[in-house]
Amino acid sequence: MGPYIEHSAIATVGSTILVLVLALPAAYALSIHPVGKWRDSLFFFISTKMLPIVAAIGPLYVIALKAHLLDSMWLLIILYTAMNLPLAIWMIRSFMLEVPGEMLEAARLDGAGRIREITEVIMPVVVPGLVSTALICVIFAWNELFLALNLAVTNAATMPMFLISSVPQEGLYIAHLSAAATVASVPVIIVGWIAQRSLVRGLAMGAIK
Amino acid sequence: MAGVKYVGASRVYAKGVTPAVDTLDLDIKDGEFMVLVGPSGSGKTTALRMLAGLEPLDGGRIEIAGRDISDVQPKDRDIAMVFQNYALYPSKTVAENMGFALKMQHVPRDERDRRVREAARILDLDEGLLDRKPKQLSGGQRQRVAMGRAIVREPKVFLMDEPLSNLDAKLRVQTRSQIAELQRRLGITTVYVTHDQVEAMTMGHRVAVLSGGKLQQCASPRELYDNPVNQFVAGFIGSPAMNLLTASLTSSGASLAGANIPLSPAVRAAADKDQLTELVIGIRPEHLHVIGSEAAADGGAAALTGVQLDGEVLLVEELGADALLHVRLTGDAGTIVARTEGRKSPAPGQRVSFRAQPDNIFAFHPATGARLT
Image (tube, rainbow over all chains, first blue to last red; front, side, top):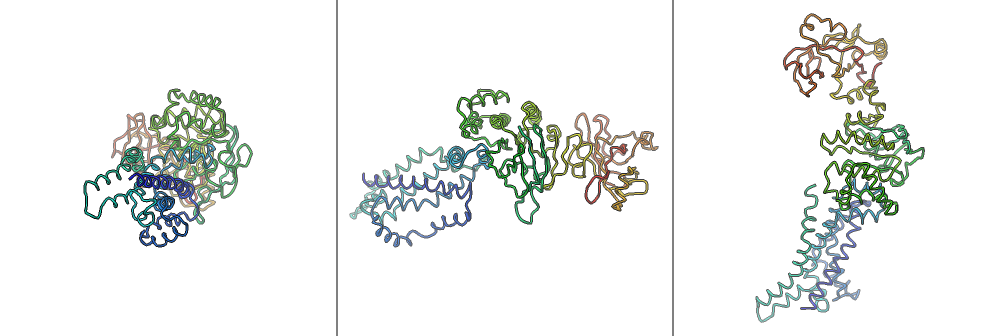
């Protein structure tokens, strides 16, 4: 079970960090200082979620094979990042829109450049939103089965695959499966518990002034 | 310290739409407290934001201390702004909020602390509050922190965008005088935006009245009240607003509700020049004096000294010291408001007569709204 947990943890943490690193500037460019055609960009990001993942598995397999990434941790990190990125951009963008415009203008008048504006003014306001976005990315990546099953079956097998392998061909052993399922759920529950305060604040952002 | 000059400054949000600010020319002197006042959509906030550098100019230029700053970054304009919602940084303490601009200018920490404490002292902000976060402060304290944030920068110009609108009525009156006093003490040129004409009249050295993006009049509060240049300024300045009624022109003056209002030769000449058949008569509520019912019945000796208007009281608004009478004039000539002494006000339904001195009666062009003098 050890390697399964390790693989899941690496893929989950790695992809979540990558998602946040990429989503943060993207969300900024689609909300605070919108780039040209930002609506089209926003639609493009979410449109990538419209294709059922089954329809993309063939091309993904070929690409992974040619890039020599098949059955590797890197492949899972890249795929999970791509899977969660659109959702994260949309979520973080909506949190950034909550930052009062007057506060950003005050920062401009105070002489804050782009970097200071993000680190000193925007970030403290959107941190609860970032935590809730990260948690959702963690849950989705941790529970992902389809891609792992088809593209990373041995060297990078994850916890959901351990669960499947816990159903022996001789028959269903409920006790064994329950124990495996409990172990598989524990990390997500722990992360959720740690993040709960920020999560509630993040999800309720904008609900009241 | 420095003067501010708008030279034909314009802001157009979209083609074919009326400009938000239309070729504004305004000269604000060094150390002056200038209030921009007008109804919503008049362009007063846009004009202020143009000065702050938060709105680009579509025409003309703006100068601070004789230097064209139209294309200068907001941070390099040497200004400080107080926002309507204060715009304090929620994650920073009061001291950090006030010192943030200095930190951005790489002012050493000791100097920063000194200036923050000095600003807190000027504003009577308790030093214990400096370590608190904005959400732990009351509305009035937040307002003072926002002021403090502007003061520590020691700017050439203060910009204030309706900074009192989030305070309750009592605190607003108190803070109003504090800001005016502070400005006098610091002597820093201040541009203050408000929609409240009482605020404008009580605080400003001069008041610029805007409407539809255009400057209507810029003068001292007294001058605006005594000599409004047009119907808009006359109706906007003064509370309750000036009574504005259409009166037909006769050979001996203007006829309103059966009364003859004598017109000065200059007004008569101006009306004749434009071949007017009617004009708009303006009388302030405080210039209508109730005369006794007996006097009204026989024409009254008192009425002889002025123009007499008769009508029926519709509503009495008691304000304590004063009362406002809403009166329908005889012959359905319109409804007017008059300010009278509180304790002796007539009851609704009662007939009343008013007297107004011809000197206190304004005449305006019915089409252009310009004052006829």
